[in-house]
Amino acid sequence: MPSDDKNKKVLGIKIDVDTYHGMKNGVPRLLNILGNYDIKGTFFLSIGPDASGRAILQLVKNHRFLKKMVRTNAVGLYGLRTALYGTLLPSPMIALSFPEIVQDILSQGHEVQFHAWDHRRWQDEVHTRSTQWIRDWFEKGIRGFAELTGQEPSAFGAPAWIINDKVLDVLKDYQFDYLSCTRAKKPFIHEKIGVVEIPSDLPCFEEVGVPEGISAVTSILKDGDMHVLPVHAEVEGGIWSSHFIELLDQVKMSGYRFTTLSEIRKLLPVDKLTARKHRMDLLPGRSVPCAV
Ligand SMILES: [Zn+2]
Image (cartoon, rainbow, N blue to C red; front, side, top):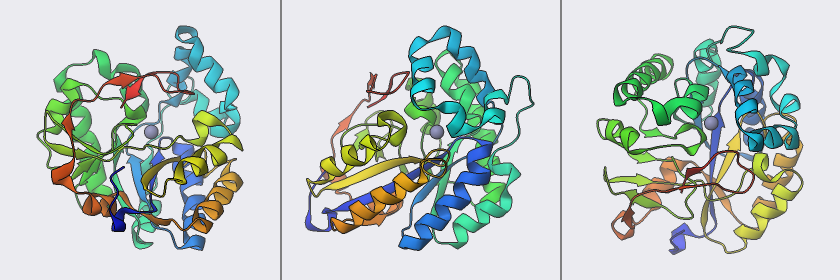
């Protein structure tokens, strides 16, 4: 990422909340952890239905997904109920079920942004859906976001880092200050719409596993630059929270300061960023390609 003195040793914390279980249990635990370190991060919330159980349908379609589920102990990470939502059990609402937790995030000084209406359906279906379907998905999600927070989001982080040209067409209609929709190595401008992209450039525990994830991240941070760490409420706020704490300890000791993505947006030399189109790439440890 670009280096300037004020941009040295800065780590943005991007927390994605993908499931009911993660919102209910993972977010409070992460709030505790971040509070203990006096760290502010950016929470990207899934607002609407948790249809995680639909992922089971993916098992028969995608062997890489099955390997990922086994490698990451998905049932242990997400819980058995999560595995059934949207199939045998009805889909509960995610952030909309927990307005008080959303208020806790805000009152503790964190940033809250928009991640999804229905995270699962986006992952599975956005490539085959019409612009109108995408538009409706945003309408529902942003309406719910506004109900919960009293304001519109100023950023969007795409579920599973999946976007396409139709998505960008819809995004053009929203006045987002920045997007965090890719796993690129450094920030850029989405040339089609002229909006700044702040990518999650570091690997996440879910992809690398633990304790390997800790050394994978800390070895990249040795460059002393600006980075963004992708965190999942279900994972770092779940059974791998002790590894997350260990990572924070090590990062803090190496002299990094932690911040939100909107702070990073302010630090970026926007006029010096490259304008380009994203492309899709299959990153190590992921089951489907994501935007880079
Ligand atoms: Zn997500």
